[in-house]
Image (cartoon, rainbow, N blue to C red):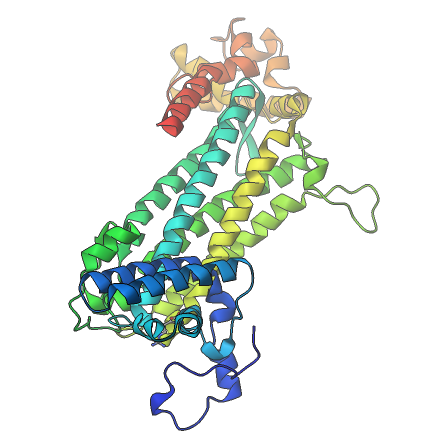
Length: 464
Ligand code: ARG
């Protein structure tokens, strides 16, 4: 990256003074938008082909432009292109290098377009790839969670509400709950793609162009599904980027929820799981520590992506039509959101199969906290007692259990019958953890049979 004004501006015809050094450093974007180079070149190639097709440039100019752009792409990929902050952004860097290479024809590439429709096009091409990448990663994460759920379909753990033991659930059911979140995220990403994949190219600076352009030709060349309807909107709109970032923020919210659970479960107080050494770090002072850094970092990064979303919403708020330079600052938050989601999904995909389940500890925890109290209530209802009365009877039994330090399943029949004469010795099978989870045997319930059915449906959907 050059430090300053060593390249001539492409727009300096009407300027008498050189740009202030601070202004140049403040306004450049090439340091972060150079990552759009491949999409910028793709868009330029389609534009050049279209210009030749409609007779605005000659076929020879087109061929020179295409060859020059191909070489520039190779230079960039070999890290052999000098990015100059004096040339401001990725667009003007590539255009200037093109003209250096091929001469006059390079100066014709920008005919009938503006950086305003160019950047909007580049960003949509870039995001389209990111959407596809994130959908693929979500698919990997989902299939790993589903595989894991299958092995854990019968593993019993306490289910919580208010972080208090509520009812026993199967660990497979819990893992499938995470999978559901990512299934919806994937749907949201795919839906957002429809609004991303619309082409602004041809809208030029704001009003369109006086050249006889063929927007449908560039649209097809670039694989867009439609062209934007209104030039003023197309060059200024960033709602497609906001929508993408909002889906990223939601993915990160889901990732942070499950990270929080992983962190809690890996603590010695819970001790439900053990994380692989390769995903943890130690303490510089406490030799015994094995810290769950990866889920903690994921949980923390969620804040940054929410920040990215707020940054983009705030950037767009109050902007008059059409393009304003504010929009240049959309890139860092957008790129950060995409990169963060990508790395976090990759980490989760790799970590999921390596987490060790401590089924005996989960089971022991499910036996505490009277997790089968609802089952006893339902048992009494089946014996003809109204639900509210049954609730009270079991509440009293629980109070007795707390006082005598006994779980409901440890009460003798006499002890149970002090609370209701309707209780007979068939009660014990419903007071077991296995009986409790097996009883929740309907679509969406925690019974192992239902978990397996949910796994089959999820797999079928993933494969379709
Ligand atoms: N670097 C600019 C951006 O990202 C490109 C468009 C600049 N347009 C302009 N008229 N200054 O928004």
